[in-house]
Length: 292
Ligand SMILES: [Fe+2]
Image (cartoon, rainbow, N blue to C red; front, top):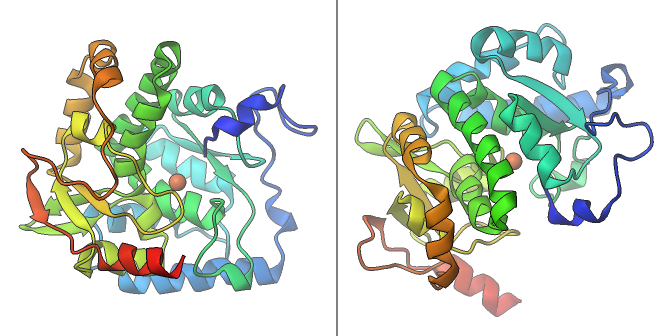
């Protein structure tokens, strides 16, 4: 996970290595914590098969490890490395953006090691090991998506030089975290923020509230997002190949310059030229606004 606030810190916290990694300390998980993983895993694994991209279900096999409960990152990394060269490393929570991107550019996915408490089963703000590992790792076993993640890490490092990270972060948000993909003539889930959430796995696909719009790199990078609730717009890619190609073929330096003068779009905006799958009624967001 990345967060601008962590940049205020001067260096890794005590106990962390220079690259901010810490031991996962698998032996320290309690039976209750393992049981929480199993419960979350069983619930998502039962509901996702018809909803999620087949690549995710295929990748889920790398999480079926020999020990019960929370995966052991070492064992997980060994399997993942054989498939795509990625590994999973534990970090103490928020890490500075350059550290986050440096790991990604070198095919290391940084993950939180703590797991949510029973009262947080349906919602927590800071990503835990279930979000980071169940949500993100299965697609790291897909060769094309694995390449996209590395390309994003490299692009992230470059974006820091342009002061354009907040624009590029929207690409991560609307693809890696909250992306939809059209396969076999219908929409499927693939974003980690969706597939690790029971409620959003239903909302993102079935609810008439949100917009569902064809992916366009520039359009996505102009669009603000909601950090603490279901999204008002989901962007739909045609394939991981297409997402990777668009990312690799885009010359980001002139795009960042162009975006400096282009007005940002609201999370619920529909624009001329949008390829619209659903023009959302936005009832969910309106009802939340009334309550707030
Ligand atoms: Fe995430």
